[in-house]
Image 1 (cartoon, rainbow, N blue to C red):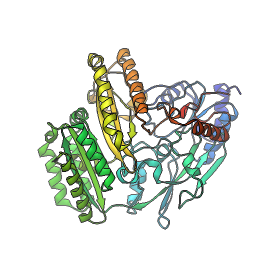
Image 2: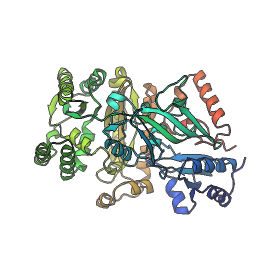
Image 3: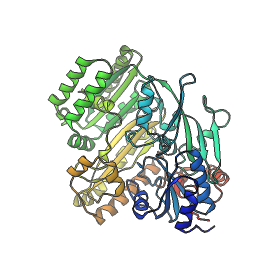
Image 4: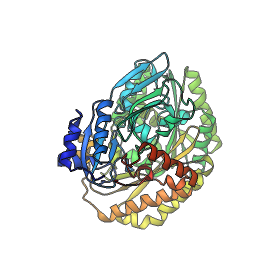
Length: 521
């Protein structure tokens, strides 16, 4: 079926009651993600509830237009950038209600546009939280995006990734029908049909309501930071701490990323955030001491560090959290690590959903992370291969002002995430300018488009994606970047195609995501 002209599809979409944007500026803005621009859009729909969402999806697909969901807009893997012109993008940020906090059954139901930060704040009033409780981008990143793209950070060391906290979903299919899967109090019940629509990157349906499991918020916290001279020792310690089950978050930086963090963080804001957090925990005197320590020590305590590792633990009582940190300390000691001031994990925990200014480098450089989740047994070999790749391109990178730094994190029950981040001088796009705080943006140098650097960034990104594939890595935010279907057996790929054909027979639901084709028919 051919797509309808823009004016006709806009009229049909407005008839559903949803807000529709079809001006040139809006269409250009929504065609971008943080990394790149997709094909031209026909319209942008901003539904207010699941009924408007369902009606507008039906109107778009009946007219032959593909539909693409967008959450907080934090994708850098083509999660919502169209491969072909004529798609209708659904911006779900207006669907941001917390529908029910069910303390009896320990679950919470939200609309997809609810941010992780808003959910955490609402649940904290009940001394509750979800096991996984958000990405570092949670100020803008949404729960719906987390269920579609998956993700890690807060709670990940013990509770795994975002989708592992999900119990049930309501999903709008390509024909506009609403499918309910899962139960509000357990998953799975029979075959895990909820799981079919989790981490699908929006290729199978659009999340309309999401129910997540709840746990009590921790009463006590422990923190520790360590440094290592060698990558192998650092990675071994990360793995041993995760396997021991003692930490809720385990993450670290290579020397280059450490240096970048030291350049762009503000001691004054760090101290303020830390004081605020510790006051909430009921320790005013300790809060003032910690704030003073941040200012007095500055950020020099890691100047000579190579690899830094940060561990956060929680407990019902302080003795339990302290015991877990003591266990981490023993593991690190066995691998030759050295304990240092634990300011960084305290600062990050004090402001878990801070401003998203780090999507630009400290000198206004463009930023592109590429990650892979590898088993513990393969982490050191994969990390070494990434270092070798950068060595091969070092001369070109230096000539173009391009540099890199690597984040590492442990994922409970899974393995080690390795995330090299590329930085290069290049022009900002509209999503970046909308995301970074205005006062911070004004302080940064402005770079024009650098064609040579941009081409090398894309070559390096694809090279790292291919390297991760060779090392058997898994990924979050698969979207249009990672080689998911290449990793499937023939039988599994056939099954995936059958599921797609059942729920989206004309391939109009985010076509191209997960590698599932781009047909407009």
